[in-house]
Length: 493
Image (cartoon, rainbow, N blue to C red):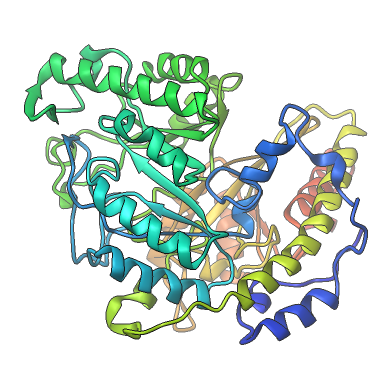
């Protein structure tokens, strides 16, 4: 099926719900059954409904839907060697960092402002910058206020799990449907290398004793959430030489206790961040080490590979952050919620998603009909919507796919500094991009100039704009068929 090209950008740049609805009626698949066969066979309908609009719990949803975090929970009950919470910071993109801390009332203002202007918004999360369960009164007050004003928004928290068991029943009562727990170990001997101390039961614990208590609380909290039907995602920070091999055991434990997703993230280690690991020279894993570990974990809990390790005040689609557009000084003191844009956007996306599903199914059929056994590593420049719709020079990241006869698998993303600035190419940034794309066979983008295209080719990486604005899977299946057919040059001319 050849889809009418409706870009996500064209949807979100409209100024009224009426315009969005007009766009919805101008194209897309009209069949309500289109693409239904792509639903995961091992997932019940209730779970599908929970994750379909959650960009962190569904790789497919992250093409269309946005999250926002409100920084209302600055207090924390543990110290992690990879964490340094920073406030009034707009330049670092990592967990624990925010530009401004909020009260629950300020958070409500901000959520309404974002919901009125960002129609993709589907999830409100509290991810600190401390711990959402330890700073519980602020977390609860924020959720209660927002749920009254915007009842259809999904509520989500991230926690280290130490105080989680105390609040599971309240989370269920408030209809919090998704919880993320950061679990980096199940062996306290490993844990003491990651956590210098915890504060629990009005006491500070250190060493193995601290790690043992944290482990027991995390497992109890996870089991309690599973019993109540709340979906859980486990975040684990991969720290080479500390817990990288141990995460295989972590995966077994959390899978047995009902975790829905396991997200293995690379350690962010830079001395400029002021973390203990950063200051002591602990390195993070490279892209190949991360993928190798993720591949070894296949077969346990479902793996999340599209995480962007968001700030505690992030706003927008994963891979983008519009938080600086919604600082308190830019938001009126009195603001009312208008859900027109959000509801119209969902109508648009429902039609586009049906067509995208059909395109994916056709791509899978194409690959399955081939006798080839090779693999193709593809980097895609995209703004969202599942399409190849970003200029090479403007890309801040590339989404990485692996194609084989068995299908097309999203395997991660690689962040880069954009090549183009003010219409000029930055040679130094291109060098960094080429390094980041090591191991990639082909780059797909909406546009690319001759200079970067030739330099990529000189490094053994092909690049093409021939599939600009096509669905990602459609383009990759066509490339794969040509690669293992006669001549790729026709597709990359």
